[in-house]
Image 1 (cartoon, rainbow, N blue to C red):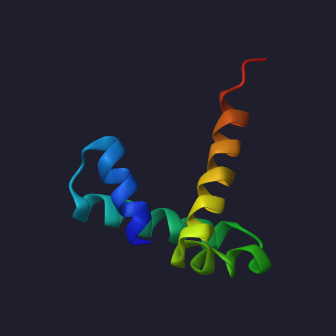
Image 2: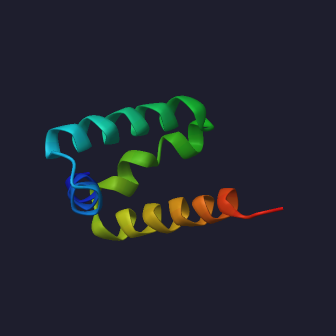
Length: 70
């Protein structure tokens, strides 16, 4: 999860403590909202670089879906 915090700090310039709070809030939110089998995999995704890249790709895909104009 530290890599995700570092990425947020790098891209936004916010303090690391603030980025950590944001990451924790988002992870907790996702765990509550996603189906249990998927929610249970979130921590595993964030524990290693491959998982982080996978999470980044998923979030990027979601962002592009929401950003499409109709």
